Length: 136
Image (cartoon, rainbow, N blue to C red):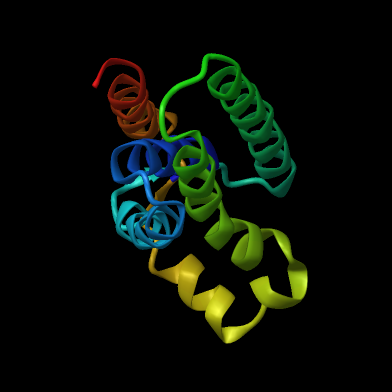
């Protein structure tokens, strides 16, 4: 999954759970579950870089918006979002860890597709997480 999906699902978990520590832990677990769903991932290294940058721009925008509208459980929301992101931040972005056995395990267990149509899976899960955040 892309990190926007992980951040928004983690935020939705944090919103519903409320407890920041539990939200963080559940979001990490849910991250690993989501990675098993087939999803789009660019093939070229240059495109991966742009894809990740665009993801983090959207993540920052969503989190800033959430912090400015005073939803309940904001601490849980933030901890959930961080929990949803922390796996990829550690295992994908930090080169020595990415190349480690743990990093390679994380990468191999995912079901990546270079077919852009698979991005709809990410968008649907992200939309569901946002509906949970804003309407439930």
